[in-house]
Length: 160
Image (cartoon, rainbow, N blue to C red):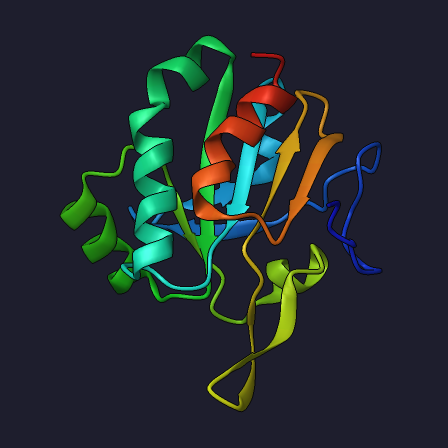
C-alpha cells in the first residue's frame, strides 16, 4: 500500500531545498557544497532512541556499499549538537549528523508535522528521507519510512 505524501514535501524532479546546518563536529555543512555527489538526507525524530538508533546504525553498517554508489549520508534531527556528539560516539556513527534545532530545514522539506502519542499532540519530525542526485535534484522521496527500510530504499533509488 503506497503512502500518501502530503503537500509541501519535495518530490522527485524537484531541486532539493538548500541549507546550511552545524554538524556533530561543530562545522557548517551546506547541501550545495556537496554538489557532484549523491546525497541521502534522512530526517529522524530524536537521537539515541530505539528507531533512530536502528536507522543510524543501518546507514553506518552500509557505508562501504553507499560509498561505492558515490553517495554520502546526512542524518538530520532537531537535537542540539551536544546530543548528536553523544549519539555519534555511543553508536560509532561514521557520517555527519546535523542539528536543526529551529526545525527550519525540516519545515522546508515538509517533514515537521503534528504527531500524537498517548493522546498528546505535538510537533516533531516525521521520519523521512530524500535521495538527491549529484546535480541537486531529488530522485526519491520516502515519507514516513520505517527505520529498517531506509537503507534498502536508498540503495534502490541509487540503482543498487
